[in-house]
Length: 166
Length: 202
Image (cartoon, rainbow over the protein chains, first blue to last red):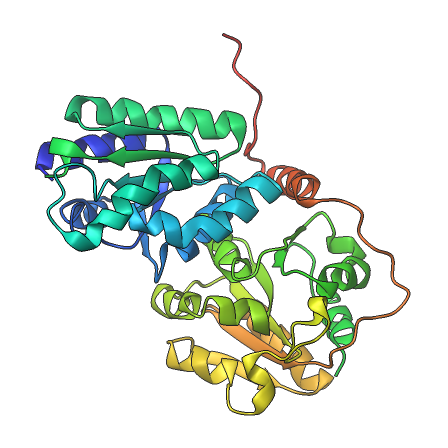
């Protein structure tokens, strides 16, 4: 990721009022994680799997603070169980920011499943999402996701793909 | 040692804390053992989510004491949270694990703790939560609850309890959504904050 894209993500998170970020690092966002760690206004929590991160974000919601779950899109699959229970069972929302691995242009065989499953899994969970491939649209997409999740009390997602992450 | 008796002992020590608890029979038991904590307790039906949610709440409200009432099956579902607690060292989180060595809510098939080898407190210590203890008596349990509620680092009490549910207790009637609203309104009122506010007019 270019520094300007990293800055746009952090601006979007701050605009949305996010103060806690849970993440499991990946390669496409590799420049983003240290920037989040270094930001004095954001507490980062490293997790062992994205489902754990989703549940921690749910707990942060209950505190009145705003959290984000940042991950590769493969983490969505690891998060399905807590997302389904928190979102559909209790109305506890999690906003996710994920890298879009496996879309057209992918050159790693192991990432193909991530591209094939991401949008159908989001659809199965009825999670609205926006795929952003232009840097100037990152900030607005993140802010919009929070607006929607804090009106619906349900999860939403922003997937960053294309030139934003490659 | 019965879980319901442990709950009554713990409940007597709680006043301003917030509680997140696990699924199955423990929900109805806590509802009855700690009636003064009903609004301050989030009753969840989520294997593997309870302690992570409690930690998220603890991270968001660092001045408030948070109690997680987890289970052997629930913790085994996501042991990774122990490593996260070991690294993050929250100062305001007490985790109680009701270890009845079985999946009681579906009739009692054994969990991995039933065979004498798997020690959740030892796993927690190995993950960096130094204060993690296995207890088998009510007095030990009470002493560790007292210490854990005052600790300035994460504290885990694994309570070996029998696989029984207190008979003839009133069942909680609300679902996860109603429970969340009750809990959120309690947090809002006691913290003086807004979590779920009014809609915009536009």
